[in-house]
Image (cartoon, rainbow, N blue to C red; front, side, top):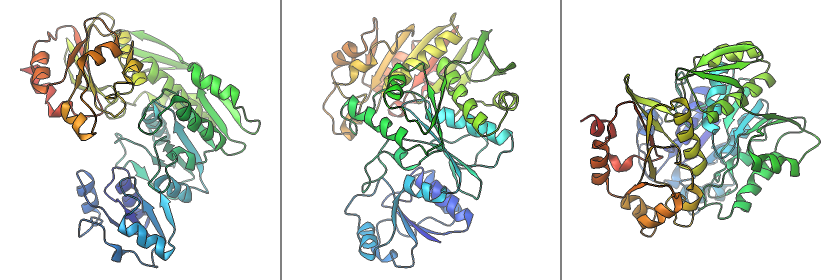
Length: 449
């Protein structure tokens, strides 16, 4: 098989290219820009394109399939040549399905918790020596790649609702056709792609219809929107497994879970993580893994990258980094840290970095999300607004949207650095939430002196 990647430098695209190369396929690709770590990863496998740019002469009839990345536009010269030659052209998820037609397919969807749930599931499968392929949106400890395609009988996919490609603008998770599906919850996001909540909700209705007959939908019954959606769109040809918080207790800042009389102390914490853990358990149960083996496996799970990741800790202070940026994720993360350490002051710093979060009309969705923080800071950069070609965002709009007393709103990185230096980090947790980089500030160096 000869597979050609248009936009091979993408964060997930290059991982699939490497996985297929390791499977023994002939892999080629192109891109007009390739950044680290994709550049080094491709170079180490001799897959880095010799010349940057689009080269239609690379496209010929000997290519069995072309995989089109989101970065490629409709007028891409290589894409036009592939269409002219009548080659098979797939978006990333469409091709994943081609490689997994004969596998048991697991898809983890939802507005939040997808990566963590997928990571927990993968960790336990690895601990129980279960053979499986996977697709996940983060670098996970114990896994050298974020995509793996072999001859394993199972594939686990983080199922994203973002568009598949320029030719196929439907959500990625519509192309996976799972036997085992998970929905972790629904909270409106990505308003540049889904301009209304009803349109966003419709994508999840379609996902439910894509579950294979005889399959199962494992869903978070504590999410009222999701629960109502499922009740209104019941299928008679699939099974349903609701889940909620597992039995647990918190002792001296540690969480102890109990599943079917099997208990263990775990490293992750917070209701959102416990819900994700229970979802992963029910998937494992469907795959034949016992509660005892699940609990034994999950206790060594330390979390996915940038999901309540500890970047500094001593006896008085813990600094967490988290990917939270959407309103539901911010609320869940803040609540988790405060509930785990109720006697410590919580300083929460949130960067607005996405299109939705920087949109003045969306900010009211954040109301109450920082409520449990003792000190709350919202930061955004004029540079981020410029890159997204968005209008200036008044501080008053942020204050009105979050509706939190004594909220600090900062839109200058020098002012943010100065503010962080004033924080007294005794008996205190610092929570840094962003899908960006706080405009390049080295926060750890700033707070440590």
